[in-house]
Image (cartoon, rainbow, N blue to C red; front, side, top):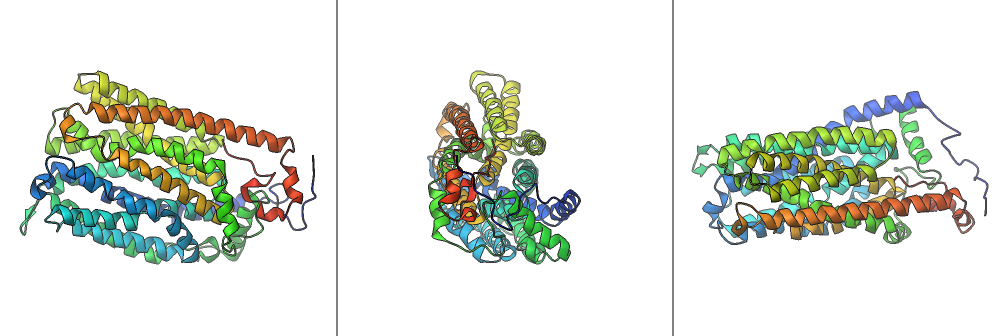
Length: 479
């Protein structure tokens, strides 16, 4: 067992602590950052999934794609650029001012969403969906990296939950809004175009406002005092357990960080878990109005019936995110959520009663939505420093989003009204999610025990300890 002395100036959690200043910082960050991230994710999910609401408002009939798989193709093409841009977008966020880059993406996708309402053909719809994927592709990874610049590892999950709860809320709010907008007939545009006109224009306005209020990094946050700014940077180095000597304002890109991310087992385990989780999450978000219409409800009624399950998911995301940071655990909540979601899909498959099927949609929303921010936090918690996190999170999201090639094609018009194929595939994906979550918990726990026993101390004499990142013997993985 090799023990190396700490280099002079090494900061440890034991040597410095300032809980009063921590609380003050977190309050300021919560007030000045989280509302904008919440809005970003709310508009993001509304603008990517409102096509499901437009489907019930006559979009397939007007564009001549009411039969076959053309509608599913329009859903699928969104994810091709969405997957490809993630890693480069995360690296751009580190080079370009985050307070400019993220609002720029928001404003651009809002403009594209507005243009969907003017679409008169299937080809036009496909082009718009591709452009939406280009501009939305960097948002999720960008928000995770952005949060990690301001909050410590075991403060992040609750904040991730607070912004991610906008996803189920968007389903509820989007259903209510679509039920009203889908009734508008004005200026030659009937029903569904107005869903895109109004929601897209609102996104553009929100994006422009974000330009003026989102800080780039803690070191550039004008709402902090000099003392708060200095501590905001220092505490992130403390939280990294000596794995880096640089703060987010001074860290420079190096290909060694990319290589470290590529060699990390947790990157691929998280990718696989998230891949199978996103199969039901995406299909549920896109097809919930369709699933409910398959129970015999139509148009406006089906739109309104999407609201309660999504609201249930909204509250569960907030609750589990809070509890997860309290006990500093992620995997157990993901496992629990998948079990709840599995029960929901079983209810959809085996029951002939609409009340039971509708209750199943509540279990799916509560189980699946809360698991996704858990995975975001899990991935970000176990990768360090910032450039490793940017690359690793980008890889994870890119691989995971390949599940869209499954999720967008499992609910087909020919399978109405029971949609047994879609429910069965989603059920199987959640079962695999549960198994892989158990494997990752076991691996991380094994690695932590190795570090507790000193089996990884040899790394301290093999090079610069401040470039070890999450491989540093003092770094402990979050389970």
